[in-house]
Amino acid sequence: MAAPGPDWPPAAELRVAQARAELLTLVRRFFAERQVLEVETPVLGRHGALDPYIDSLSVSPPQGGYLQTSPEYHMKRLLAAGYGPIYQVFRAFRAGEAGKRHNPEFTLLEWYRPDFSLDQLMQEVSDLVVAVLGCEPPVSCRYRDLMYARTGLDPMRVPTSDLQQAAAAASGLAAESLRREEALDVIMSHVVEPGLVGQGALFVVDYPPGQAALSRIQVRDGVEVARRFELYVEGMELANGYLELRDADEQAGRFAADNQLRKSLGKERLTPDPLLLDALDHGLPECTGVALGLDRLLMCQLDLGDIRQVLTFPRERA
Image (cartoon, rainbow, N blue to C red; front, side):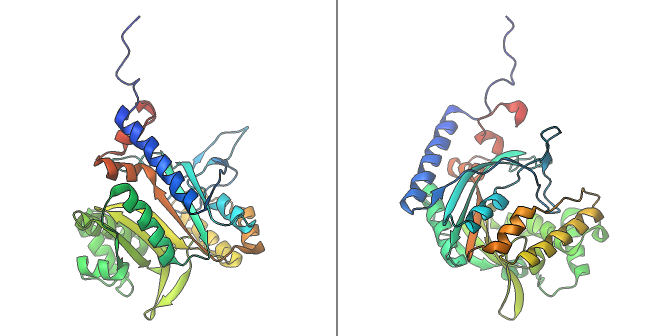
């Protein structure tokens, strides 16, 4: 028999697999102590995510459908059905995402807290991350202040052309090819995030309203902001949390706008999930929710620089 080739072993060393198992035990203990219910929702769903900058993996007929990019739509149906606080360790899939911090298949920890404020949810995220990493608790900074400190630009008021020029200078992309939100994302990834290395853990809060996703928009300090946060540890994004949107009509309008943008980007227009809209129409409780990348959290815990080093499935899938 020929010697096995170099691609058959798992990507992660045994010690990493053991650390992953310990992390999952810690996570389940953490939520059990707080009486948050573990749930399971479909990995294969009838509807894909409409976010213009996230691509779902489709499944060919006769089964059909989409591998889910997150469990959000299905978990919100459970919330509307009265399940109360819930969490899930979820295998998520996103097409075209590969690199040192991205893999098409990855593990999300997602949870929802009825009647929690965004500050309360951030405290819970902090408690979990500090328990895993042993780091100092994250400090908070407004997106607007952070962007201004790094670039001298006010993301809430600066003309789009200024953002385009700054993004082009940082990335080499053509300025005129970038929409406002794309320019902001480029500046964040190319200018702001590298400056967070060495700064420990940081919550970035109050994003521009154009980056609301499924969060609510409110007026704070005289400007409209998306009530969401992201957690960074040493410049790497670990978590994304929202004060959840509860209005079915507004959500339907955002889905329609997402589809228009998808069309302009040359992407497939997707049918919005009608059961999510029905659940919102029935009544989603006042709640906050967050998705945290468990693979990235493990990378931080073990001081590893490539997501493939924490994946236990074979290299040909990594």
